[in-house]
Length: 147
View 1 (spheres, rainbow, N blue to C red):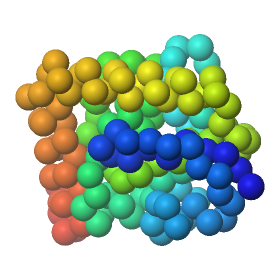
View 2 (view 1 turned 90 degrees about the vertical axis):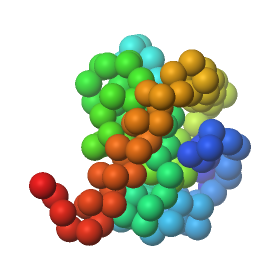
View 3 (view 1 turned 120 degrees about the horizontal axis):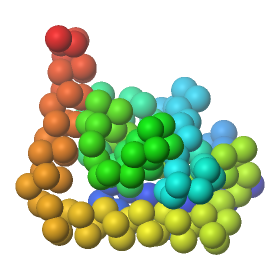
View 4 (view 1 turned 60 degrees about the horizontal axis):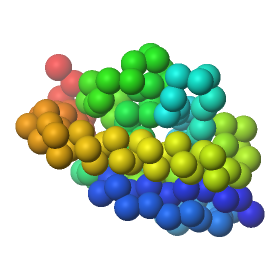
């Protein structure tokens, strides 16, 4: 059994004990859908399990996972700057090597959740534009229109 931290697009979250092979029960269809994410510039990463198919199925963007993915990939901690690489649907955060998340890891994710909540409240128009862009891109990709 593994311990992960499940975060939904609406920013609700909970600690979860599960078998990695059964993650699809919480996330939807999985095909090795794992990406490395970061919540700080300390070089430490977590893994995020998610369903890549969730985006094509119209799932809501997950701003916490999307922000953390961007941080790990680019070192850019600016909020929600890349709608193309956004993650949609629920996400389970686990240790980078597949280990259990620690209380320290969960605290980092919780700080990310608070940051996104504050951003949504402080910059509602910017957040709405990012969310709309993610959903529009997903819709176009699902329709086969990649121009």
